[in-house]
Length: 79
Image (cartoon, rainbow, N blue to C red; front, side, top):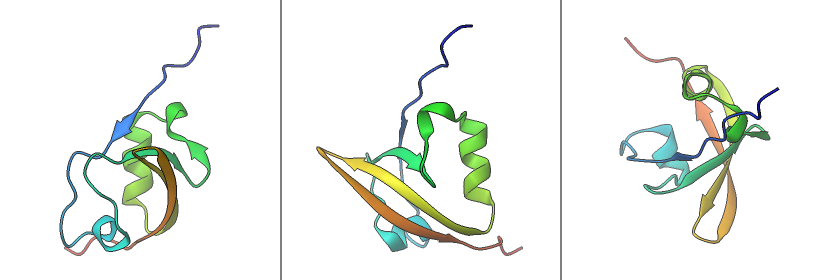
């Protein structure tokens, strides 16, 4: 078996009125885990899916030399 593809997800931008901005996610933060699951094991599609489902997510973010945990509350999109 081949090893999994290792992935790194860096925040490119944060919408000012988003749940991510409300909890302090910043540009250039690296998302290292969502709900204790390493993002290295997630495809971009899987990561996006986690962020489109309502509920609470616990993000582990690497910012410089520190790793911080942020609690993100997601709601159903308004149409």
